[in-house]
Length: 237
Image (cartoon, one colour):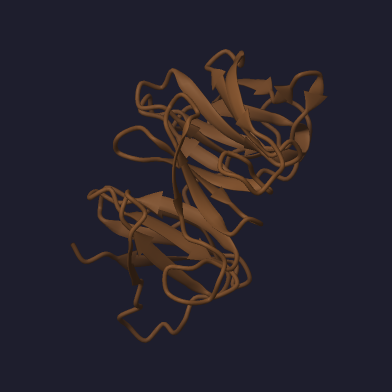
């Protein structure tokens, strides 16, 4: 719950429906369902809010199985966006698991990726993708057409060294974690750098921040990998 008290777990290790092998990303649809990138099993699995298994489908690009990294769901819960680790693409599936369209491929140019990671939807339904080894965030129209690039390689404000997570707040601003620099930076949805997030308490610095989420309670939830914890921060608005 919001205080960190344990409620329940979903799944166990394995290959059967409802089980996982190295799951990475998780998303929530407007239908209340939970979508999990079951990376080692090359599939996405869907559960209801209580953790009951609904269905799952394999992630394929052509005849090749793909390791999904993250998953996001369109506002109408009709399309599922999946980032692929070993094909360097964003793939869009129907709720039944039918591949609708895809874009990307390995490279440095706009619309290409080197290990795309976390994916998030902006308020205008554009799709933001953390392009990890290209040290940037790329934003696309729903069609897959390139829109803008956020960040570039570097260690200065507005630059990224090892981006990992992304989340969108109620104003539409983008929060991007940098697991090497141990910080979170904030950008507008037009790609303009705003500021580095400051921790306004005695908890000290973050360590390897990765996954991010912003709740309706205006709190930022940060998965800190090497500290094996989730830290929660109140956001000023």
